[in-house]
Amino acid sequence: MNESQPDFTTKPRLASQSILLRPFEMADSDALLAILAEPEVNRLTGSVGTSAEAQRQLSADEVKRIRHWYESRNQQTDRLDLVIYSQEQQAVVGEVVINEWDANSNSANYRILIGEKGRNQGIGQTATALLVAYAFEYLKLNRLELEVFSFNPRARHVYQKSGFVYEGTRREAFKFDDQWVDSECYAMLASDYLKLK
Image (cartoon, rainbow, N blue to C red; front, side, top):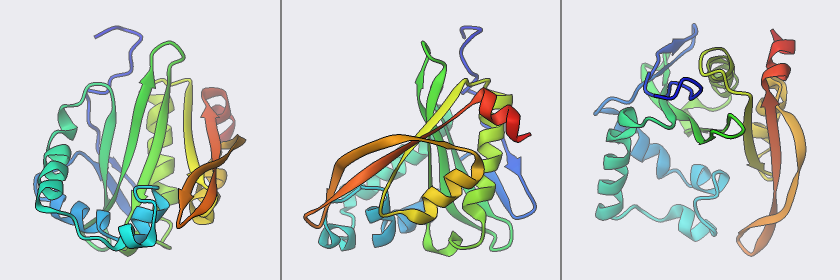
């Protein structure tokens, strides 16, 4: 491994009182498939373009592909995918991901997905704080960036509260139910993170 490359081979366990971010286990795919079937998750992540598509059931081939995807996450060397496990519910409620690592700028993308059972409990804020700390303190990234659709104010609030800085809007970047939706760009630099500590 190149000395300047972040160590994505290590899949950590990051814990708070309320949640545990941990590597994927074989049994997690059932919970994640259920989350990915939620219409609100499909809409907010931009996985579908219409309300009808958001309600659609996954085909057997899609289920098989998604299971394989999750089963391969711990072997990835250029990204970090972790389950969000609720300590209170004793259940998987979502996932956090650092991906799209750019060696030249030492930057990566951040995304989070939380199912209905994990919403409105501060889990997104806590998971983001844990992963941001890991990104800058252990992976030594210089920049962590993300995009959020304008119809997802809850996520935007979490990102802003976590210290991500608004950098601009990709106007009409997505279409849902024949309505154009803006995508807002946020980022946090290592220097921003240091100010938060």
